[in-house]
Length: 251
Image (tube, rainbow, N blue to C red; front, side, top):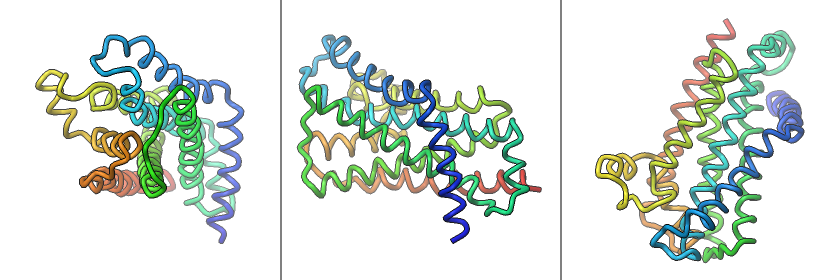
């Protein structure tokens, strides 16, 4: 129980940092909402898709955008602990060493998942009407949770290897870039041939397509396994790499 209690104690510390940071809340919650409104009511007019249909089309991408923006702060705060010497101070304390990384991951998952739910509620307030039933909602939320967990471990790795906090947070722009070159904001059929080939086979697209099929259409896709496979693969790879780098820092 020491690992669990130590993780929860350190998670409480990190949650205070996250919830008391106006910059974090604006970037992770308000920015996705503003982006959603801009795409629907400003850029949406140039789309061939009707506005009401486009709301359902874009919401899954905005949810992942929320998480991708949020995990940048996970990398930022972890790297900040390293740069400020707090990391070493924790190492000298009689606590479970795994709790240090675990607390950052738990904080990231909880904070970013809640932020995504706030953004989802905002989308419903502006007219998005999900067709998902109870089972659909369970699967959609599980997938979003899995994606958040995967992106959180990616953030931890970048937080550990970055030379400074600016570099640590910059990796989230790579994730956001993947979102824009995916099926998130426009159908991949409208992209140039080279970009379309990349967009169709990169990990964000099956996750977005699955969320869109479940929430917007109320249909459980047959290839839902592909979205979960990408998430599980990322979790395994980046968790192993993060623990490897972390142990090297303990020596």
